Image (cartoon, rainbow, N blue to C red; front, side, top):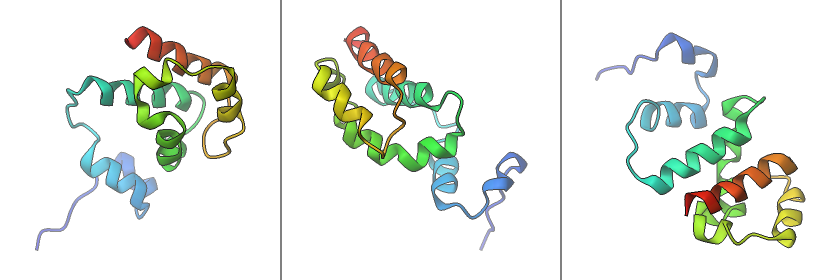
Length: 109
């Protein structure tokens, strides 16, 4: 059996199943689906100033909070949705980042 070798930049996260799954299945893999790319762009925006592992650990909560990153739904988010997102401890609660995600959905369409 071949033992999987990890690159040195990931050694600090060795043993973290979330990080290892991301590294093994997503990192460096071309993505051609525009909706999946939009999700990654939104998550990158929320990551600003934070570690990527923070976002990876919250990704399921982000998907639930942002309607599975359906831009047609997110583009229609209003004040009640903004308030709901700001109250959601499962995601990064930043007015600026939430507004950017909603605006980004409108631009995406």
